[in-house]
Length: 94
Image 1 (cartoon, helix red, strand yellow):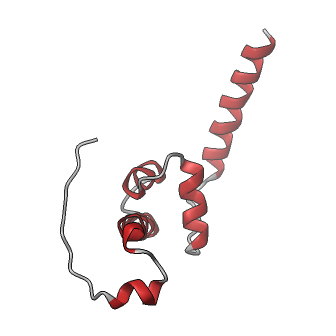
Image 2: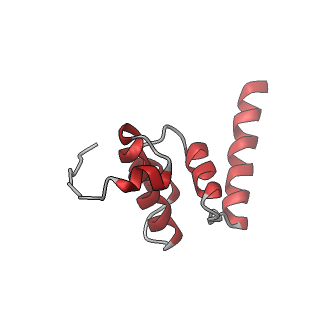
Image 3: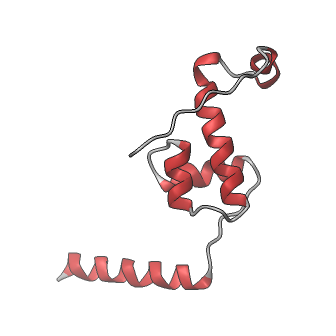
């Protein structure tokens, strides 16, 4: 992944206010950016997963849930997932 490095200045009191250790602040900021951009509809779930730096979409879904953000999962998405699962299951039995 090609990355962009940015520097921001925050008051040290943010650590106490958030209860986050300094070493975990990068992860928190990345997660918050990913959650907000996803909430605004500016990035997909896959891109949010990448921005947050988590391993799987499920981890991102749990992060979204922690922040009260619903995933954008339509009936068409569900239909596509069911078709994919059926194909995978038929491949296992065939």
